[in-house]
Amino acid sequence: MAYASSVKHGLLQVPDGPVVSEPSARAMVTSVAELLGADLAVAVTGAGGPQSQDGQPPGTVWFGVFADGSARTELRHFDGDPGDVVEATTAHALFLLEDALR
Image 1: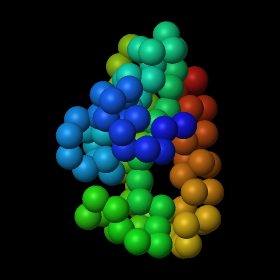
Image 2 (image 1 turned 90 degrees about the horizontal axis):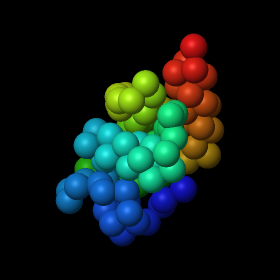
Image 3 (image 1 turned 120 degrees about the horizontal axis):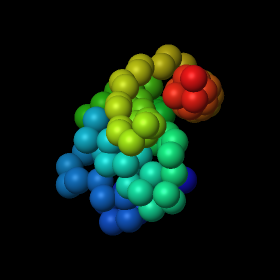
Image 4 (image 1 turned 45 degrees about the vertical axis):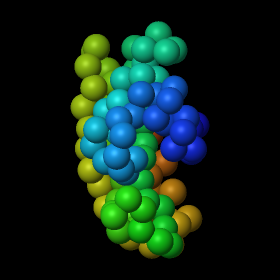
């Protein structure tokens, strides 16, 4: 897990700019797969709330999935308090991993 923006920008090669974004999710999942030599990886970046982050409202979550040698991204919006957003995000990340294994 890399919560700090400095880790995301440094180690995971997230480009300058908002962290809650499609380019960030793509960079994070690609970098993680490369660093770990993984065939399958998932990355998540979002605004859990209660405040917005990077101009994105609470519940905005970008997912990155690396499988079959390439990365794809997906945007989701979840309702609820921060705990609800984290729970929904975790469940969806696991779904994406399971789906990639099929």
